[in-house]
Amino acid sequence: MSGDFTPEQKRYLEGFVSGLGAMRVQRGMPPIGTRTAVGSPAAPAPEAVVFTGPEAEHLKAQARFEAEGKKLVVEEKAKREEHPFDAYARMKQAAVDGVYPKGVDVFRWKYHGLFYVAPNQDSFMCRMRIANGVLKHWQFAGVADLADAHGGDYSHITTRANLQVREIGAESGIAFLEGLSDLGLTAKGAGADNIRNITGTPTAGVDPQELLDTRPYANEWHHHILNDRSLFGLPRKFNVAFDGAGTIAALEDTNDIGFQAVEVREGFGVEAGVWFRVAIGGITGHKDFARSTGIYVRPADAVRMADAIIRVFIESGDRTNRTKARLKYVLDAWGFDKYMAETEARFGRPFTRLPPEAVVERPVPDRQAHIGVHKQKQAGLNWVGVVLKAGRLSTGQMRGLAKISADLGDGDIRLTVWQNVLISGVRDENTGLAVAAVQALGLGTEASAVRAGLVACTGSQGCRFAAAATKKHLEEIADWCDERVEADLPINIHLTGCHNSCAQHYIGDIGLIGARVAVSDDGDTVDGYNVVVGGGFGPDAAIGRELFKDVKAEDAPPLIERMLKTWMAHRAGPDETFAHFTRRHELPALEAIFAEAAQ
Image 1 (cartoon, rainbow, N blue to C red):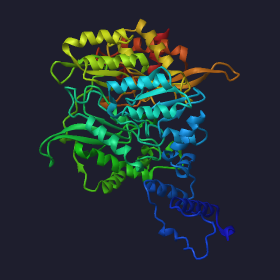
Image 2: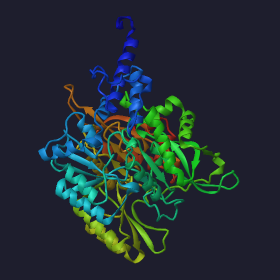
Image 3: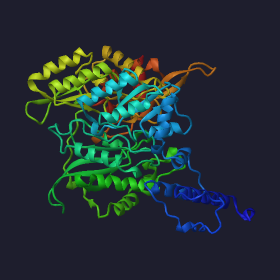
């Protein structure tokens, strides 16, 4: 009979049967085709099958794609065959045996925060979850101790205000994870198809400019995720950020959901005061910022809103094509109105929609407030922003900063999306002492305009996707330009190793994305970059435009020197930023200006 079907009908039938099989196994029933004992009940009709358990929404979405004749990607099949959280016993045995994961287990282990990063490093990297980037001094020191005991003697601060530790051996992964738990920290869901670390305003609660302290909302969402297994196993990763309109930007507009604190005026039918404006769809590696939905929520309802948005994504996100599985692509296909209508139905009550004129213009962030000493809203207290090299800290420096925080600050360590550390609660009379103590660690609290705005992903030294050693090249650019350029306005230079854009190269004044550059006819290549210019974020949001291709890494420092000097010599006035200078020129004209400067 199957010979009478068209190829499309056959694919549908195969997907349909496969989906039924998955349903039966999930419910503890024998697979289709298994013989049953005489008198056993007949298999239920397909329409009677009901998914149960915390993975029900995900299994239903998978089955729908298969019923349409589509094939699930390997990662989706892996989730269905064994949920990664059910693999912990196997992970522990692998640690006893001293072996790294293979095949789809590499993916499953990421659910627990362990990334096997071979071939670049034959070891694990562990990425944590630190809501709003704030942890206690003793937790920070404790992570340093774990790194010394089980990994390399250093850590990296990430572009999601998070910590990661590298060079963790196969036998030490579980010990590291359980050590985090003993510290009151976790790495659960820090990788793979999950909601990543929740970011917020780094100076939340101490910032004289902020409209709202984001810490309670980031923490509530953090714990909501950790205690609801159904929020793991999304079609792809998902980013959420809360921005309280403070002095240091949280880059919420680069997230899938950005909650933006705003002040609502009186006279628009709702209670005046601070609300969250809801923006969705940010993914700058795919050249999109989160866009306002025109919907506003009371801060107390932010978690409920985030949950509703993600439930729609769980149901609708593509599980057959990893490159199209992010929220952006559902929004592209559906439009914002349809997506938010579905979200509203799940939210359970009508949304509050306000016109732009109902909202007071938000305060503008200071692009260099993450560096140096700054007054807090609390009289007599300050935060101290510490400069790091490519986000790296030795374990000794971590313990030293923890001691400074405990002795001279309020005991908090605050991480930023700009890959550095803030120590808050330092009294006026102790700021000089705190700065001197930071310097004694081989760190600093002052930086040039160029060095203060440098951001880099892990790069090829620790990531198999990267085409260039970004952190090494970032330092080469900084050292070269510090000796030759005296920029008088902030500059952001972002280096990312691949199109995953972990360092968000498209939002930098200058963005570099790794590329292999040919140096011979025999196919020999060296590290290099394609260069984009004119990016921005927040009120100055823009996607950078590609200006140069295939620049060898060794040529990048003098190229950037020339670009910066040309900008300062030809800008329209002393207040024209590099980004605005590049945006007012078409690319051919801009290339000609920079080329002329090289002569």
